[in-house]
Length: 301
Ligand SMILES: [Cu+2]
Image (cartoon, rainbow, N blue to C red):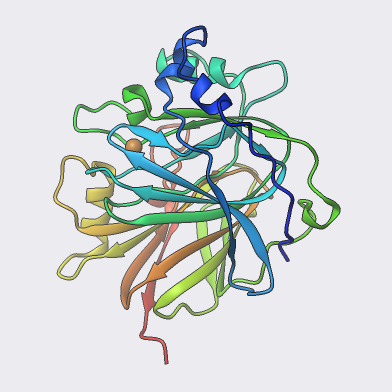
């Protein structure tokens, strides 16, 4: 169960300060918006989690909190842009800074060994992606890895941010406490997406666990009428270049082995693909190795 956790919001001004002279270039590039954080009910009703509302634009994030208190946190990504966006989170290793990680990404240098920490996965324009994750104290580097029409990652166009998590979670909100019960569950293994439970149309939650020894993600695509799963995957490989054959409704960006997440999404009746887009060492996405699962969502009765 998620517990109510005290929230620490950075004092007003620390957010605006990131844009002021004297701060480094990466931070100026990353548009930190207001740090509005609200509490909202999760599916279990009794449980509440802190929710951060972040907006994705072409090409910037607004609303990424500069500082949040450790514990379970719901990230809701609203896509206000005209392209598909996602928000990928890497936990920065000790001895490194999030800025250095983002600099490395920007300049195509070797990135210090970070841990995949999830984030709301790819979402179509006008839609919202929501995921609940556990954050221990540390620095987190945020970027959008979607490819734009020029072939460059959105991060290179400015979709980057830094989030610092401080303090220790209260005793009822530690990683050992499972997130609230969900409508369905997904276990990610090499190379399968195992779905348990039945999803009907409506606002639903999906518990996701990485049961493998490497990072995997979960992307949820609603296949548009008249299109096939193959059409949907072809579009998703280059969403800025092809006409949409699917609607991306989020999921969770790569999580590390053992990590769990709760994905919230509004399902309409229809056909869906649950897949992993993480590339293997040869650069081929895991879904090509069979890491995908077709789901049919029926009208709720
Ligand atoms: Cu993007």
